Image (cartoon, rainbow, N blue to C red; front, side, top):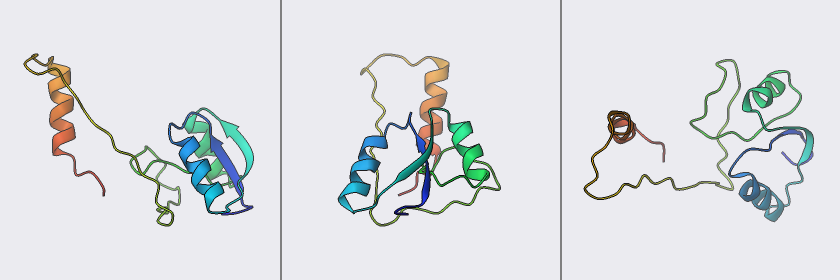
Length: 106
């Protein structure tokens, strides 16, 4: 990846960690384009302008070639918290059921 054209996702909450991991592994990223909009980033990748780091479970285009980043591994922990004893709204209850029934990678 070092020196390859890169499309930088500016709104990525993991951006600083990815940049630090690349720097620590002597991977030099050349940001050919930057965007805060994921749909624009995907369009630029589809147009072969460069590659991008995307979350494993993000919405992508079916034609888009995807490869997992294995070494070095970049991961995060996501938690769902609630107030003990507080009843859930129907929307919150549905979201919790969906999260519990989903087969999360890793």
